[in-house]
Amino acid sequence: MELSLTQFVTIDGVCQAPGGPQEDTEGGFTHGGWTAPYFDETGGEFVRQVFARADAFLLGRRTYEIFAGYWPEHDDPADPIASKLNALPKYVGTHTLECADWPGTELLRGDLVEHVADLKSRAGRELQIHGSGNLARTLLAAGLVDTLYLITFPVLLGTGKRLFAADSDPAAFHLTDSRTTPTGVHIGAYRVAGVPAYGTVGE
Image (cartoon, rainbow, N blue to C red; front, side):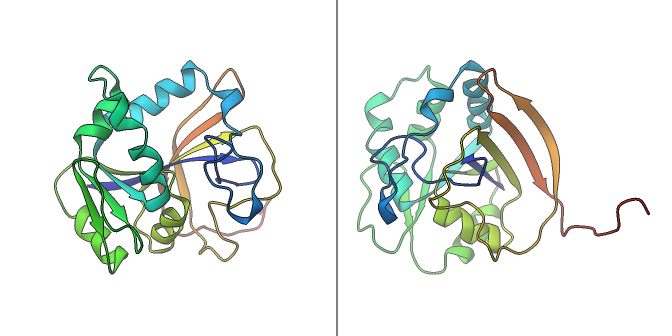
C-alpha cells in the first residue's frame, strides 16, 4: 500500500485543532475550529474522493480518540466516509493508549517506523493518515509518506502546531491535482519527488 497524508493547514502552516475549539488546546491554543466557516461541497467532494481510495487508516492517538468518539455513532452505510472508517482496519500509533474499543482497531507499540514500513508492504491501495500531526511529522521525516493531500485554508493564526518542523529535511513534490473551492480553500495533491533541485533564476 502507498501511504497518504491528508492534512488541513492554515496559510502559515498551522494544523492544530482544525475541527473545533476544544479539539486540541495544548500550549494554550485558543484558535480551534478555524476550518468551520470554509467548508463547502467542493471540498467535501474532494475528501470523499480521498476516502474512496482507502484500504486502511493510520491515526495518531488524539485523532483516533476524536474519530472513535464520533464515527461509530454515525455509521451510515450510504456515507462514504463513515462506511470506510467503521469497516476498514485502523492502526493507531501510541505509547499511552491502553485499549481501543472501536472494532477493527490495532494499537501499534514500539518502533512506529518499522510497523508502518510493514503495513506499506501489504497489498492494497492507500494506507491513509488523516490529521494526526505528530504522527505525520514522524513519518514525513522517515520518508514513508508517498502522497500529501494538503488542504490550505485562507487563515493566518501565528501560533499553533505546524505540520512541517523548522528542521524538516528538504524535499521536492510533484503536483498531481489542484483546485480551489468557492470559499477560497486551496486543495493540492502532491507526490513526493525526491530532493529539491537548485539553480540560479535567469541562467
